[in-house]
Image (cartoon, rainbow, N blue to C red; front, side, top):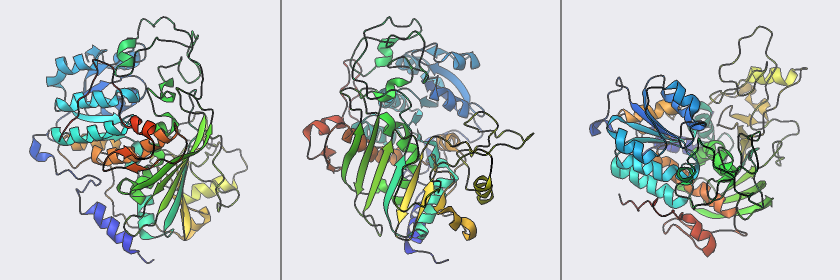
Length: 511
């Protein structure tokens, strides 16, 4: 098979011109006094329930968990029980001040509005940071985190696990080899929000639960009364009104469906098509369902227009959320599965898959899975009912063909999938990841920068957050990255930087 010029150019760019672990501009960290690979890191966590508990579990098998922080004792109870010797705090500032000498790395897994301040406080004290996606809530904060990482010379990683997947790298290598030609359009989609959005009224105040420090939960956000929305028990998504999960839907606390899933689903397009290096020509919300004055909508379609880059042509990227099934996209054959693949009933007596997302006797394709042609044929031929996942995925449209990926860049394949019969994946030009948390731990111990370190994550998040702003304003937005300015809408431009509550300010950081 012939190889395109871009295959060699981009393969060389990412596999040789930068550190061997790929994707970063920082030099090796070994000269900065980091730990030996055989020494354990001492981890602290800011946010110890929910996603924080998952991140802690990823670090715990090989490293030490030495301090835990959460504003809600009930939310973090299981983690506290699991690590009874780790001191517990509700205020991360107190934890860092008192336990700082014993901490090497910090996991930040709070609601989005608190990511930036918690991460900067940690980096100022020389701590490596693993920060959950979407990294931050505003573009100014993304630049602050990148500047802080450079200034304090710490290892960093954003928690978009798909960036470490084999399928994400396969996708990039297929595009660079020219397997689908020049890509001019990408669609990415999600069933999110799973939490309430598009509400128009805020319920009356309720008493604050005794396990929750509401003022610390608000942190940088403007003060307001706590409300459980009249609920005495959490809804089916685990939330009352604002917390512990529904905060994602509020302008002041989260970034909506786009912020929740774009760092995963758009990871493969960002890597393969170098979106972080391109000029964003314009961003526009083309469709909106259920607008609100204080929340993100129930569903939306956003279009990002990107300028050409190197020998890649101009590109349109469409984001669809609030879906109940995968979108109908022109050119995709009827009956073709795009995005996440369904699951088969598991054979009687077969061992369960270790990473199953869904309960019951069904196989599941874990986020690290590569496409399996034989399994796909078995699913197509099955007379038993398949279990279809919630709709998430991406589709690349080139002038010579199409390819699709799952939620986390997994199961990358050509469309129609029958083309995979005699297809051979490109030889790898990108260094493979040992796993997302392991990638970070390696960097924190002196290895090459992690694959989604802030030199990579901050520019990715910057263009994505323009879509979050576009959801709140009609018409096409134009953006000047050199000035960090939305040039045609003053109200939208004001959303590039947050307003911090008095006593919670974060000063600008100059590297």
